Length: 349
Ligand SMILES: NC(=O)C1=CN([C@@H]2O[C@H](COP(=O)(O)OP(=O)(O)OC[C@H]3O[C@@H](n4cnc5c(N)ncnc54)[C@H](O)[C@@H]3O)[C@@H](O)[C@H]2O)C=CC1
Ligand SMILES: O=C(CO)COP(=O)(O)O
Image (tube, rainbow, N blue to C red; front, side, top):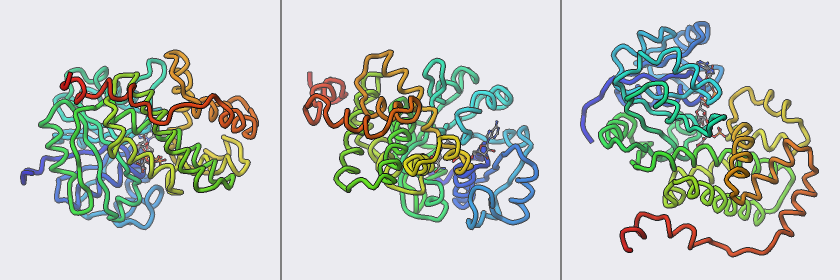
């Protein structure tokens, strides 16, 4: 690590943007947080707290909060994007020229349709020539904000950018690991949200502990199968941005995706579950996108198909569960499919 603290801007004043910006400021990094709502910004400056998205967390007095995007971007070398995937492209289109030449790090865990595009791919389209990275891992905003120990992954083929992100974000409560599998890391963060909905729903239905473990383990097999087919490194899914993030979101009631699933499992409609949350749960849209893509690509994803049938095709959960449990018996771990694609295996050949 170096002592260099490059100026950083975070775009997005929700739970994760606020958490990252506050952590950066606490690390002594000159940090600006941009959000669009002046009333919320004024409140945050006055109260020293984001009472809407992160109540009870004291903001570092060194953090600059602004709604002036030009001022926010003027001197920033690194820009973290914590904007929901539904607004990601339009925000980039509004501010694109201001981002030229900067290191852009997406923290958004969603997928754009049509095109099945990751957020980093949208950055490449909207900001040609940008230096791009993604950040993903078991990173519940509230826990990071409260200083609970965790780790995350920064992924880019630009090693200098990876190191810069490690330098500004790493601290006593957060370890930052580097990866070059940007696609796999980003895909892991998006896919796990779907299985968090499923896990929340299962918990609300009162399933057993064995059942919860089975669901998470088969979810890992399923998401890895999909990601490897799409070109990701399977080893990424054994890391923090794969199984690490999957475990936390499938087991924690703090996860918004888990909360949506839990509400559905208690009999609420999808609309009620989302409205009650008041924050983004990316997994709802990702479920639709993933169902379509897995069908197009012919990838076997019984959990995704089952959850889609319950949520979007109004099939009774008992029927879906019955079908899943009586499906053709399979092998446990699909070593052949995984190992054929690992870089290690390629070198050995
Ligand atoms: N909260 C968490 O624990 C984590 C969230 N993420 C990801 O970060 C992304 C953002 O999530 P959160 O901050 O948690 O969401 P949130 O629901 O807490 O906040 C979303 C924020 O985005 C803002 N926003 C929405 N549309 C906008 C637009 N057009 N222009 C500017 N701002 C806009 C909202 O005003 C709000 O401040 C999501 O993709 C999520 O998956 C990633 C890691 C952890
Ligand atoms: O991505 C997250 C933790 O790593 C946050 O998950 P939720 O969006 O489900 O809260």
